[in-house]
Length: 415
Ligand code: PMP
Ligand code: GLN
Image (cartoon, rainbow, N blue to C red; front, side, top):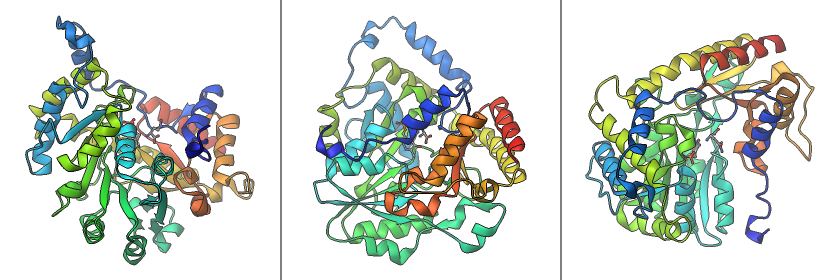
C-alpha cells in the first residue's frame, strides 16, 4: 500500500455493510432508501434507454454532459441568486465522494491544514490525509442540559466561536462544512455560517460546503442556507451536491461541484486525470429529471419540496420508538439520520479499550445477535476525540415503513 494511504485502511461502510449482509440484519444503518425512487425517475430512465440517439451510449463531455450541466444551471441559478455558467462553474463527477476528493486534492499541498467539524462525514479525514494535509478538528458541543434530557435536538449541538477562530492560521487552506449534517441532522443557522464565512475571508480560506441533504429539512423555520449565497462567499465556496440523495437513488453515483471558475479549475484538473468523464446515460437521465422538476419547482408536488414531508413521519416514528425503548434520541432538523445515546440501555456491558470503541462493540453485537444494523458514531470523529461520542449510535430512517417496523420490533424486545 502506498505510504500516503497507510493508516486509512478502516472504513465503517466496508465493515458494517458486509456484517449487515452476512447476518441478514434489518438495515437501518447505511444511508440509502430501500423503496422506489419517485415514479417519474423510472419513467425517464426507460425513456432515455429507448431514445434512438446512439451517442447516448458513447463518451460525453468530460466536465459534465451538456444537457445535465445546463439543467443543473437552470435549477440552481435562482437558489444561488446568480446565473451559474454551465460550462465553467459546474463539474459533474461520480457522486459527492469524488466531488469532495477533487476539491481537497485540487487545493491542498503537503503540510496544509483543513478544518473539519466533528462529527464529520467520515471520508473527509482520509481524503485530507491522502493529500498530505493535516486535519484540524473542532467538535460540535452538545448543550449540557440536552445531554440529560430523554429527547433533545440536533440544534443543541453548537460550535464554540472562539475555539473555531483559534483553529485558523496561515497554514489553513480549507474548511469543510456539511449542512444538513450527517450524522447529527444539524442544520447550520445563518449566524453560524456567517461566523465561518467571516473567518474564511479573514484568513483567505476556501469552504467546501457539502450540501447533499439540501432538500431535506423538517422544520419550516430552519431553512437550508447555502454558504455560497452569503456575502463574498461565492468567490471562495465549492458547493457539493448528489443525484443519489436528490432523487432518492443512491445507486446512481452522480454528483457535482458548483463554484466560480477560478475555484473549479483545480477540481477539473484532478477530475480529468482520474475519472475524465462520467456515464452518459446516467447523466442524461438526471438531466431529464431536473428538467421535469424545473417546471414545478415552486409547487408542493415538486420532489424537492415533498421529500421532507415524506421523511418527517418516518423520523417521528423512529424517535418515538427509540425514546420508548430507553435510548435518548437527538431529533434531527434535516437529513436521513438520528443519533441516539444508548448508554443507559446497554449498561456496562460494552467498554472502550485500546483496540476498539464501545459503540463499535455495541453495533457489532446488535448486528450479530439481534440482526439489527446501525452505525457507530465514533466513526465520524478523529481518533483523539472519539471518546466524546462512544455512547451514540446512528440510525437511518429513510426506509420503508415495513423496515422501520421490523427495526422497532427488535428494539422493543431489547429493552
Ligand atoms: N457527503 C455526505 C454528507 C454523505 O452523507 C454522503 C453519502 N450520501 C456523501 C457525501 C457521498 O455521496 P455520494 O453517494 O453521492 O457519493
Ligand atoms: N452517505 C451514506 C451514509 O452516511 C452512505 C455511506 C456509504 O455507503 N459509504 O450512510
